Amino acid sequence: MATKKQFAVIGMGRFGFSVADSLSKMGYDVLAIDSDEHRTQAVSNIVTHAVSADSTDEEALRALGIRNFDVVVVAIGEDIQASILTTLILKDLGGPVIVVKAQNELHGKVLQKIGADKVIYPERDMGLRVAHHLTSPNILDYIELSEEYSILEIRASTQVIGQNLKELNVRAKYGCNVMAIKREGKMNISPDASDRLSDGDILVIVGHKDDLMKLERAYAQI
Ligand code: ATP
Image 1 (cartoon, rainbow, N blue to C red):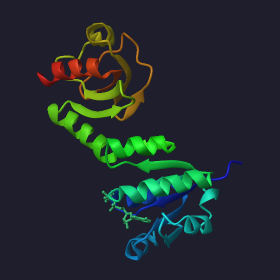
Image 2: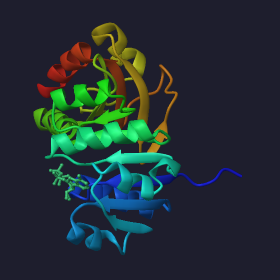
Image 3: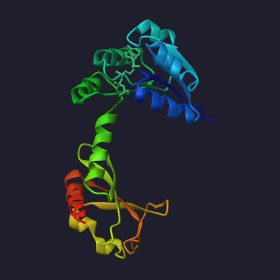
Image 4: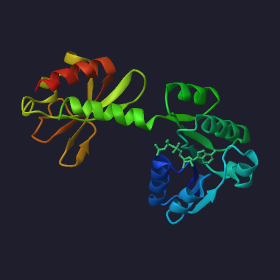
């Protein structure tokens, strides 16, 4: 039987707290670390263990047995130096997959260079999603997959209701692909060309960012 993954989250700001809280609610063991005692106290009832420690202190991390965790999330935002130092120490100690929150692109680049396994940009990504949603009420979500490709969730507008995917033809018109159709909370992940769109349907479309932008612009007019 596979053992449950063990997580450590360093930095109990809003983001770190939310990650620790969510993992805990999902049933995982979480060690929460923060140099500020008030912050560890605030999370102590939610996670398995909460410890006050400075993550730039190698000995402190060693003593916490950080090497034995599967994943460590570094959620120190503002103090970029502390975030980088912590990541370096974790990398040196070896063991867990290291996921780090970046404050900006430059911070992210440094983190990547020193060997962070995954760099995340919560503010930037959320800003992007909200901006796309704001351009048209039909656009429900926008998720970046890579520098070039993204996924768009778009509500079927009255103009396209009744059409099938062949008639809609987003592949020829925009070079994008309809990956799935959400209907009444259910997801059809292999939609057929003959599938007709109904009121309330949500299309999940994957494509190059430039192509999705064209599609979005066309939809924004509607
Ligand atoms: P938010 O997620 O709320 O936007 P943020 O990204 O601005 O927060 P900060 O508030 O800068 O993040 O830091 C998050 C937490 O990290 C704070 O609670 C802070 O006490 C903690 N922290 C900062 N440096 C260290 C360190 N060296 N060791 C442990 N915890 C630290």
